[in-house]
Length: 581
Image (cartoon, rainbow, N blue to C red; front, side, top):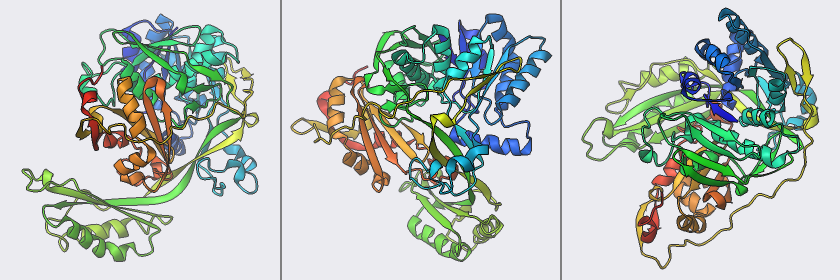
C-alpha cells in the first residue's frame, strides 16, 4: 500500500493535503493534528463554542481536496477530531453535501476519560498518578484522553469509510490501523505491526522525514519547499520511505534516522497495538529518495494505556528588557532590584538573561542582550497589570538605553501536562459508522513484560592516542531533540560505523552533562541504537510541567540537539577526513 502524510501538527502547511493528492498515487492519506499542547488549545476552542474542539483547519483543507480524494479513491485518516470527533465528522459530512458528494465518514470514540476521572483516580488520586513523578492527582483536569491504537481505524476502513476521524490516538496509529486493514493483519502479527509502528513514527511529523529540521540541511536540495513523505508498506510490515517525484527535499538514511530519534525514550517503543524494538531497525538506501525500513521486531503491547491530562496550572505573565552595550550584568541587576517590590509574594519568579551581545559590536542588534522575567501565580490580578505596568514604569528611571519589547498586559492561564496510565480494560474504543451504528473494538491483550532497555555502558573517550582537532561535535554528528511531556530527548547519530564507534565510547551521560550544563541537575538515561548508529539521551524533568507551563526559552527542547552539536570537542582527524555520506 502507498500511504502518505499531509500534516505533522495543527498549523502545518495548509497546501500539503492538496499537494499530496495531486502529486502521485496514494491509497491512504493521513494527517496528524494533535499534540499535548493542542489538546489544551482545542479545550479553549470548545469552551467558546461547544460545537468546536476539533482541528478546523482539516475541514477547510477538505473544501478543496475532498472531491479529488473521492475521485481518486484515496481514503483519508486523521486525528483532527481532537476533543470532538463526532463534531468533526459531522462537519465533513456537511461539507460533502455542499460539494454534492456522497462520502462515507466514520469516527472513533472512547479516548475521552474526563467523565471518569474521579473513578479512575480513586480516593487517594494514585490511580492517575503522574507517570514521571509518581505524584497523586489532586486537581480536576480540563481534559483527560487515552491514547488509542489503530484497530478502530482498521474497522472503520473495513466498513467502507472513505474518511476516518479520530480523537486522541497515538500518532503512529494512523498508519498502523490503515496498514492492518489493507494487509488483513491479525491482532498478533507482531513483527508486521511493529514495522507499521516504525513507519508511522517516521511519517507522523511530515517534512521532518524529507529534510526538515535536519542537522545537515545544507546537503538537502530544494529545501525551500519540502515535499511530504509517503511509505510503500509491504505485507510483512517492511516499508520504503519516499516522496512524490519532483518535490523538494530528500529521503536519505540520514533524514529517516533523524526522525526515528525524534521524541523517543527507551528503545522499546510502546503502543496500544504492539511494542517495537527500535534496536532491531535496519535502514538501507535503495535509490534516490528511497529508504527501506526492515527487520523490526515486535511483541505484545503493554497491559496499560497512556492517558494525557491537562490541568490548570495557574496564570503567568512576562516582560522582556533589551540591554545594550556595556555593563550588561549590572544593568540586569538594577532591573531585578527595581522590580523586587512588585514581585513580593508572587508564587514563582524566573529571570533569564540571554547574553547574545558581542564585544565591540558592528551593529546595534549585535550589542544587545535579553533579560526576561516570567511570573506565575494562582491570582491572575496579582501578576497582571500591577506586574507588567511596574516593569514599564521604570523605563525612564532605570539603566541607560532601557528598552522593553511589549506594552503592559494581563496575565494568561497556563496548563500543566499530566501523563498517567490506566489498565487496558478501562478503555473502550468504539467506531461510529456513517449510518450511526456503533462497533466496539476488541481490547488489546497486553503484557507486563517487554524487551529490556539497552542502556549504553560508560566508556572512555576513544580519541586518546589519535591526532585530534578541536571542533564542534556537529562537524561529524547529527542530532534531533524534542519534548516528551516534562522530559526532553536528544538523539545523536553518525554517518559511518567508525564515527559511531568513537561517539558511543566518548559521549557518556557525564560528557553530555559537561557539554550541556543545564542538564547537570537532572537524571539522564542513555540508550544505544547501534543498528542506526545512534544514541538517545532522555533528560528527565528538564521541561518541568510541559510546554504549556514552561519558562525556558526553548520550552519544547527543539534546539537542544543543535546546542549539543555546537559544543567543541576533540575529534580524531582521521574521522573528519572521511565523514561519510
